[in-house]
Image (cartoon, helix red, strand yellow):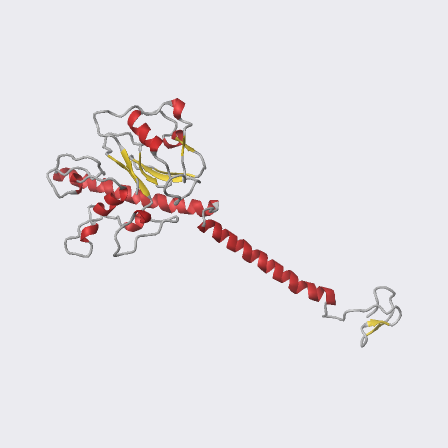
Length: 280
């Protein structure tokens, strides 16, 4: 081995050049400065990766979720909303030949031939309605008889809303849905039937009763400004329309035009009871 500086012979025992005295590293040995630097660099890199992972997890938990995280949750929540819608409409179809009224939630009494039937009950919150739909008061007894198939309390949770623990009564904190009451089969299919609870529905409720004009398409809806922050915070919503269409919007400003596909909506027949949105 020769010295790269003066091309003289290297003293293998002394690990230095016999002519200029330059210290050398033997084969398989890294220079001391590099040996000291590498472990330090590895530790820094490990800490950077660990901190990045923690920040991502914390952002998802504490109100600043990533786009991919929200998108996956919206897809799952949309599927649960569609399951609820399908369960209710299927039950309505089965009830027609039996002479029973529909089980769309109501805030007013109407005639029925079954006084103990859900169609003879009125509701002030969506949580009350879902408890009745699932026949919560009779769970665990021979009398338990849910009004629909394919529905349970897991359909009400997700995206930061915890599921009701089996055996416990359903609470508003375990219910992510706002639901429209007093809808009829004749109402416009674009009207939201289910919508996530992070939405301020005052403008939607006004429109479905009094109509929507083109000049109002850009009116925004409040997201994440009310009682409930989850699911989706101020970054979007999920809804299922009266006609069964499921849609989700990933945007901070959602408008009436977004909800009603930028098409005007005529005023609702004033002889019908007002559509009311029941929050959890």
